[in-house]
Length: 233
Image (tube, rainbow, N blue to C red):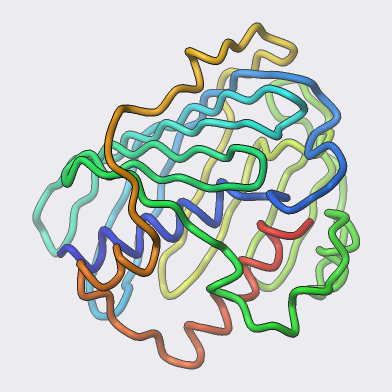
């Protein structure tokens, strides 16, 4: 059960860390507050799960600082669990709050990628094209015009670089996120983006502490592909 929670943290990190390495503006909008509905499920590493919940994203400084608050209910092999999680991007650094253990884990996305991916283009559209993705159309989400992009692993609806909807499949889990309330150019203060006063540990320390299992080559490849998309565009 604990292993599944750790993988959930990693998956949330993937969805939250788009363009953390980008030297230019992550978004074409200075600030915003977006509320999402979350759903998904499947079989991951032999564990059957179903997920539903909600998510809230607050960002400032064109996305250099961004906070995600997630509250989900998971039914794992018939057992219900409720999870709260906070993820923050702060000028290239990624922090995930573990409320159960009362720690903050600092993640380095590069540790999940092979070196061959480090020099890939950082522009979002170039990255999607490098992954074999393509723009397949345009749609409107909550009145906001979006470009729709698709790769073998994920389908994204982007408005000025901001993800308003995603449908992904990784390691047997389908994960869907869709904006239901969008407030762009909203006032977002430093206090709104503050993390709880918990001690910080590294990703490696957290993996060791939670006895995180090794991925198969196929799972590693999927994870790397996802990280390419969400950490270097």
